[in-house]
Image (tube, each protein chain N blue to C red):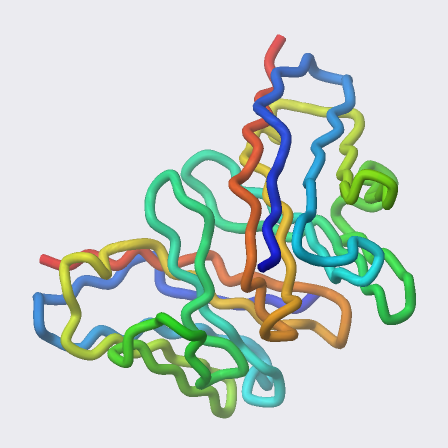
Length: 119
Length: 107
């Protein structure tokens, strides 16, 4: 059974970077398609990007290109999402998710990580 | 960039049928999925590939997709169905698009 467990809440100052982790269990990390989605308070879901294990490519949403980096450490089965040059508009809950079961729908989600950007 | 449009809110009486739409250019040519999200919780997929229900999702949830509109239908709506609902499609094979979300109120 695939599970995604994310790191805890973060508070950052404007201009800083944040790195959120997503620990994977029940599946081989390098073979797991995974995505990052965020949700600002009271707002909708927004996709930041994702990794496709079939071609090994990471695709970033155009809005975040140059500011987001998705990486992994297979030795500890953990995926990471780093977002730089933070502003108050980046205050949101950040989720990792996978479509491993249904292929095209995010069927397993992490619990979410609250990132607050405040001076 | 591709966009999906949902009504901000839908209201329904208990036991009645609720319909939530998701519109996009030639959306019927893409696979659509739907998520339910309750306050403080992660989203849960309730429909994928337009019409399929994951294991454990009640039969009262159904989906359709044709032309420019996908529709989530909830038959015999219950109070526990009150939540936010999001549609999701892929623009090409790699870019994910979400609708803006619809708040379902069960009056």
